[in-house]
Amino acid sequence: MAKKRNGRQDAIREIVRNRDVRTQRMLVDALKAAGYDCTQATVSRDIADMGLRKLPEGVYVLAEDQHLQRMVSELVCDVNRADNLVLVKAQPGTASGIAAAIDAAELPDVLGSLAGNDTILVITQTAADGERLEQMIDKLRSPRR
Image (cartoon, rainbow, N blue to C red; front, side, top):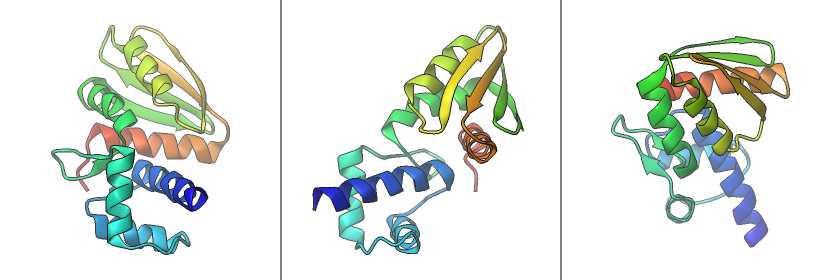
């Protein structure tokens, strides 16, 4: 049972970080598409256990990503990617704080980050990981979909 729950919660983390999930029903459907047979009641318990929060824009975010979301939405100006390297442009003097928030979120595909005054270089394992990170930062910048 715990193994199923842990696997399902890992899948929820992946889904919430990479998609705009607005309802529990959307999350149930995404989990079913990923091969998890669960009900809305099960997902509701997982949301409570994991501490997921709903942003004012109506999308779910992981509790550990909430600080990162606040920093990104307020301070990040642009994000670009070249393969597994993600370049984040920020307000002057804020890059080290944003890099610390990225590191604190313990994103599974991030190897590390380097920060200057207004630029952060984030190194991911693969180009696909870099693309997911770029999309996640864009989503956190302006959750609107």
